[in-house]
Image (cartoon, rainbow, N blue to C red; front, side, top):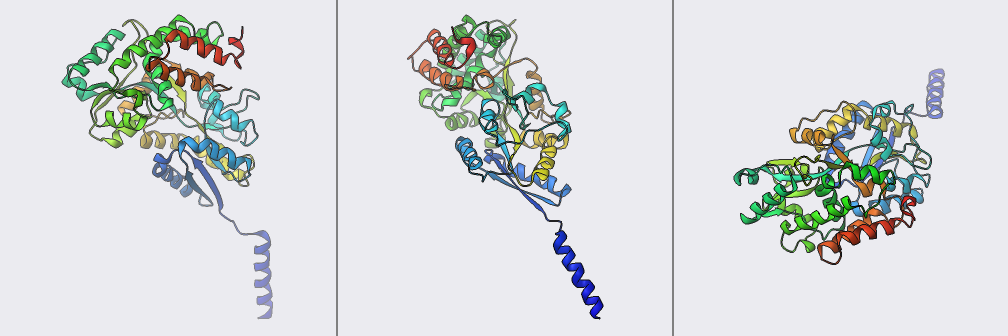
Length: 412
């Protein structure tokens, strides 16, 4: 009896020394408050396959997220995993040493991702990748197919046709476009959504190569046309904020919305009866290539100082998998960059097809790496344009001179 007691005691002691197979608790932060239920479902799938790992998903208000995250990371209290912005927003966090560099050895699926997606989550200074890309977004025109059908309208093939459609809608007593410009970032959105085809690939290629700047006649013409089409925005649109613009469209009071593909799920949630269509805003001529604006919308990263690094990498492998990408596309109606993902929603497939003819969302992709950022400059200048306080030519000069303070190709 005494021998058995000793053996049991020794076994218990050995178990204490070795330690139990403890669950690893991960924290995962995001600005996507509206997607919390879907992410919890993704996490449930992961945890079912990895019962030794638990993931706690926490969301924060989008406009304050960058500050909240940076403060927490600097103070050593940041999460194990986090959603991070792309391009310049990523560099601000990664160059401070807060993010774990990622490799295809650690996450093999990354080897098959589009290079443009990986570039959005990499740092220029060291060339290293710091996040798993999670979506691409497309700037285009979303329209109410019922309103178009009732008025006998079709998707415009030239700028004159877009103006004619807008006039017909206005004459019928509705707003052609729901957009307002009181929310600053929307001023950048409408430039890409409505004028990418007018700028053209030639302008973008020359800009990227350092052969031209924003005083280029092609860019100035695009801003001139943007000013013209604003005549078909709602009355008082300069004071109309983003949420109110969304409501105007989802309620059926406006026929079109110039914005991002990320609006599609939101509009359907607000009004399930909406029959939505999308098109690339046309160029001046029906023969001009119809282009949308595209950017990669952030990624999933791991904390370089995290204590559960192995479990974090395992979760990032899940977020890079086709299984996750398919669930992401199906439930969030967003374009996943993960190879092999198909789109059950025909509208989402149409967006993916439009992406084949595109230029980048210029200010985000190329001009948010210094201060003042191209986005801040453009948003302010477009707001002034809409209030008749500046001209397209003057905007081209203001953008070029403002960016020249840090962007070498613009420096004379």
